[in-house]
Image (cartoon, rainbow, N blue to C red; front, top):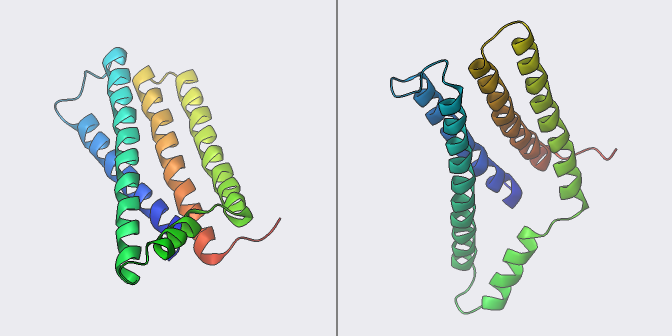
Length: 161
């Protein structure tokens, strides 16, 4: 499995875990009242901040683990070779850019669909809290789908065009 696939799978796992934690919070007894839009918005902002912080920490830990794993596989004292391998595994070439473009298109399309769905729900009379959760859920699921498409293209290849 390629380095970008591993990195993306770890990000997907963390994203799913944080989404599950938020859903448990939202459905639990400690959640704000169903009509308290201000507290729900604050809860979502805290959730977004936690996702960003967790993503940064996980990526740092992943890079450290990658460097240690490469160093263990190579001969001791061959630091230049280890450094060259690490740099080459993190390089972004045209294939990587194409995969990123294709997966981001799908993720953004799903997020846009969720946004429009939220607006439709608001237009037919749903509460603002429900619309807030529809939109936030669409963005979270869109990000997860984007990661899945990226892993798929890294492992199966991407057609040019």
